[in-house]
Length: 119
Image (cartoon, rainbow, N blue to C red):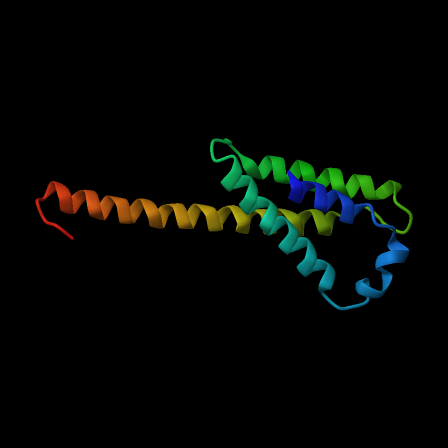
């Protein structure tokens, strides 16, 4: 929840306040990707029972972009939504992969125990 709030705060900073930063090539893309990478990861970790956390991430991304229509110097961007979605997918993938690794380790231990071997 705190990370979502941080994203909202950043999304409502007027464009004139972030103009010097926006002149750095690719920084906006990296920033959008990273903030939603973390958002997707946190969402997956905090709410593992969610059926589709990507829909929540996508909704939140669209909401923050829509909100920027009302912030001076900011604008709505489909490219930012796409970048956010890719970041969220990667963030959720990190959780998925780490869980798969843990489950594989548990399966190996269980197989060893069932076969009478002590590993």
